[in-house]
Image (cartoon, rainbow, N blue to C red; front, side, top):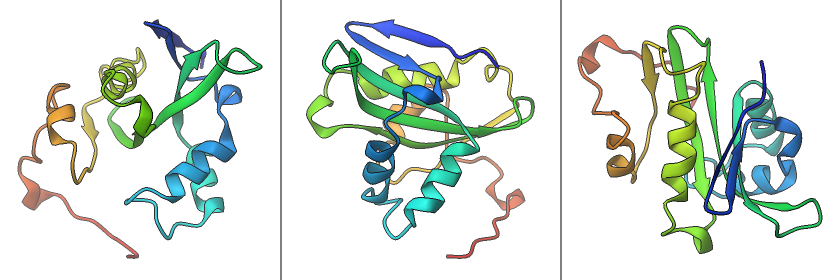
Length: 148
């Protein structure tokens, strides 16, 4: 699959996994409320098996961009997608960058026709509702097998 990039106001979202600062991303995710207690090797494996979206502030490092956010989508590109691990650095919040990276993910050309696009969040319902996400209808039809 071709890697895509979107630019807006000095920021870039890219699906090119070679651009990701893996150490930064893994370290950040390991400290999130949803990632605490997850082994870094497990986080690395989850990233290797997903479509990754890095968020970069252009022109602020030696290679021209500093990573300031991330999300990933686990998908079969046809019937199912799971949006996960969305973050933007605290000091970058208030610039609509979370919206930018989520918009790129849900409107990726390979994902726009996916039948079921799911996510889980403790605190960002308002953000995701702007992109058509809603409380799970018919929740009694869904089941989960969890090792937690």
